[in-house]
Length: 249
View 1: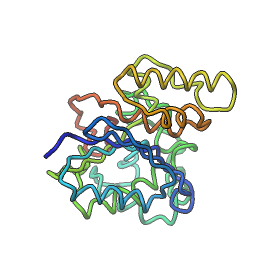
View 2: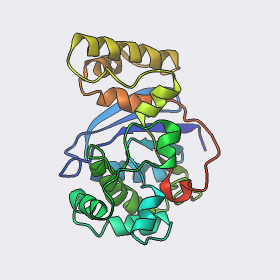
View 3: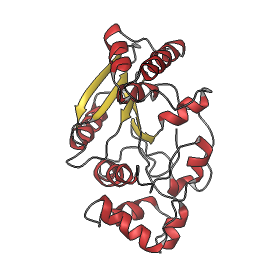
View 4: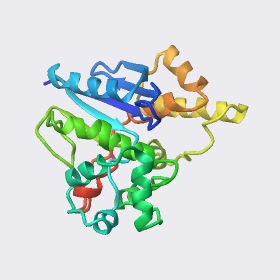
């Protein structure tokens, strides 16, 4: 085995497989960083599967909630087993159908223990997030379960490829930085992206001039979000709830 190769994925829950909006940043064992844009969810699954057989160890950090609070399991009479939840979610025709079923029982948008611990800004069922939650579980993680890819806490295996949940806002919080102000087209937004790119470089990322430019010039912040997920995750003990709720790395 060689050194760990890390991938940061800015995910999209948009209709049509993600609308080719997914961005993947990769930190190779040499320290070189590459940026791949324009993936849809099917292509993302394929890319993750490809890394199973290349002889390297891979960590895929995806910016999307992998599960829901234990209260949702209990409210819908689901055993506290993530695979049971994932299969239940996949029975709904689309994210909105799933969210309607949730809100028919409880309209509160509860956070998970990991959301509170990592200072994630939004709950998995929030109006701005629920599409990402449903699509990453049903269209990315469930297909990967068949390949026995390692999903730490949720479905751990000995595979050389691990897929975990992460959150750029949580990374910034850990670094003592605000997660606000870098998405947009104003001069202040641009200046904020420049400062965050400098922060990434101070944290050890070696960015080429082209990647640096793309991160600064992208008003939606997608490239910057994917690069933030290349920073080393915090290694910490996880609580019992993480076995069904997941954990943010």
